[in-house]
Length: 228
Image 1 (tube, one colour):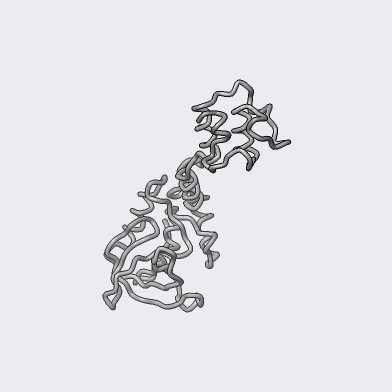
Image 2 (spheres, helix red, strand yellow; image 1 turned 60 degrees about the vertical axis):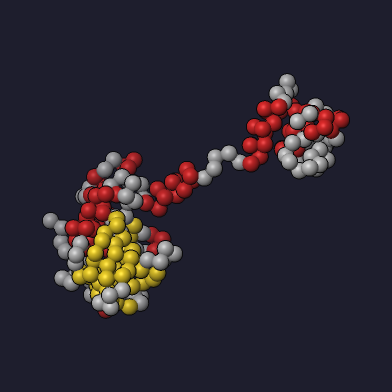
């Protein structure tokens, strides 16, 4: 059975300020929205932990775990920071003393977040959850991908695959199919248009940066000679 974790606020001197907040919505395993006693709506990011993204393995389970603990609850925010998305970054404690951040790690619904970690005890809770194969740690190892690595992979996948120089070469292949392999060309010496074939000219432009053969700067070499 998982024990409830309580946290004495006086033992955490790095917290900026505390505020009570009524939870009205849970977004995912480490983010929720609440109303403060001053009727201010806050979007809160659980500090020092990182939960799987919703479209990542175990993402919806992590959200459900947080929902079961804090939905419609009054919680205490021990605020550390505001992140780049404008969210309030906080350690969150239920009124009965349950440390919500630690609980998400303890049940295998989130990782301790090494890039932002202050409370080293979260690493111990993570190790225990992993050893006991709780939550996400019951999944195959191939699916136990830290959210920060997963996000990095997603960003890389969204970046353009074809660099501008490669696009120029592709464009060149549409109007000139060289009989000579590009591997036989060289950047030394740099030549003028009349000294080489259209294929070699385009090679010297795209691979060697030859400044003599692209007068109008449109990425196509020796246009008068090559007729493109």
